[in-house]
Length: 383
Ligand SMILES: Nc1ncnc2c1ncn2[C@@H]1O[C@H](COP(=O)(O)OP(=O)(O)OP(=O)(O)O)[C@@H](O)[C@H]1O
Ligand SMILES: [Mg+2]
Image (spheres, rainbow, N blue to C red):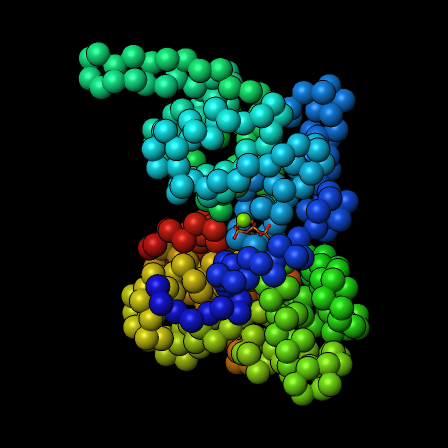
């Protein structure tokens, strides 16, 4: 995919990693939002500290930019142990993993990012390491090969994944604790923004924070990025003074609208409404209409539109909801999909599946109105 969409992409851009490091909370009580995960994790960590034993292995699952890496680092800090960082794609051969495991010190936290992308042989080695703190080093090839068991120091594995569904069950089952990270509420993002503004030395009035938070798609990474763009705009156009009007003008200039939709999102919705009367229309037809690859539309634009309750994937194709018509300033037809259902919370998070429900559009002969389970994180479910 070659689509330009730095601003509201939940993925980190190359040089963004450095800036992010500076904004990362270091301790659990600095970590904003995710109250349930924070409390569960705090219990796991405290009980481990009490027993003076490494805690259970932890799996962190959630969309990009929600704080998985941040939380993994916090785990090591809270335990007061060193942290070793690697990633699934770096563990191509079992030997890559063996080299790391055999040099872990007692109690160390091993963080494997994108753990769903680990190669099979390394994965199998990891099963044994997680369970018995042992690896089998295979020496030789063919019938003469022998496995030499090697003890490793008790450690804590912290895995992070945006695609928990892709983890093989034996691996998933070996985690004692799975932290499911959700999209953030707008109020939580406001706190993230105030914290970041403080670290960046910016004055951020409450109403300006609210303006930015509402457009941040429930994601701290996007909130921090939009804040930097607002800062740039304020520096050049307003002597560095950020107000709600300045924030709004900056984000309008960058074409991020009040609900966090960017140009591609709006193009997809616009085509669906104006050219296809709200659908249903097939993915590839819709993609041609906006001049993009079907994959781009499906993976880049649709998950957020589905999450916001603006678009539904049905067995007959893509359908705009009544909320989509309203969002683009149009009047929804009386039989619009999801008419009568309240629109999704613009902060994101609660919009999942809001348009579901058989019995929509009674008598319209549109099938049973079933909505395919569209998981925003997965990008499959092509219909
Ligand atoms: N709860 C939070 N409080 C404050 N800042 C946060 C929080 N969660 C994330 N951030 C900020 O958002 C940025 C992205 O977070 P992080 O890198 O941990 O996301 P991630 O889930 O690991 O993303 P990816 O899936 O792309 O690896 C970081 O700069 C961090 O400072
Ligand atoms: Mg990460």
